[in-house]
Length: 346
Image (cartoon, rainbow, N blue to C red):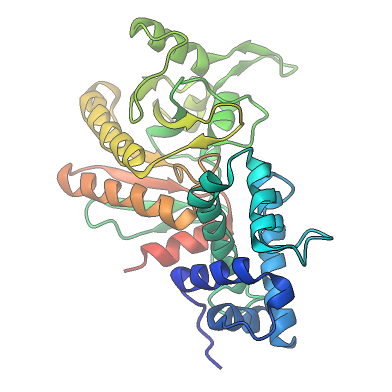
């Protein structure tokens, strides 16, 4: 039996086939890569049961949000849906996103399958299903960039220290997320605000400065072009040593939903503009380091590997062209950090 974790594309092909067949026709299905991954994760279980357990484990990691619900319907994991046809499962999953079946098939379904493949790779790990992540929270790991210095920091971006610029992926309205949101935007907004002794809000510093930037550029209530980068001060994040926040407008809200679309061209354009702005401000603000999160892999719903590919391609291109910069990549979860390290390893 092979002991290597299957490649992402191999798992995607098998997951697409499983989506079509459904769990009720799992026995006898030609799913060699899923079977190999399942044998790593559940070695003492028969291959049919092991594949189902593996897929269920992966989907369970999404929780109860739209992604988790749509994934559960896609594979027939919801009670009572096991014998549904592929078309019925796809329609119910599309309903979760309030999309037509065709639009869901072309966009969200592909993203969903990629996310499940990512989770299967995390669950299997490089050393077997029960192996812990290779990195710990708080780790700082040098990574290959092709030019300049690059460091992976395994911690939320609002807790990053030792960097001058934090990049905040934002929507095209440049309206930050609420402070209780689990997004990068919400975390930066909360950490950057000025608060009183009892935690009361005294100044929503960073969002206020963003509003001022929009007013100066005659865009209040309007959108900016995807890829636009707006600078503000760091607010209370100055206590972490941060000098500037660069707000990268990459997320286009989808009307009538809570979801956003983030495209690879918007990510790459934003990265280029981050570096261009940093060059302009380099002397005035004494900038040498820039920290990026995994743009587009949160509410933007890009798979970690896809989002990282476009982000890091643009980062490496700019590091090769603009010498003297140090780039940090903020990844809050050790499991995602493992994926990043595997993809960035030379």
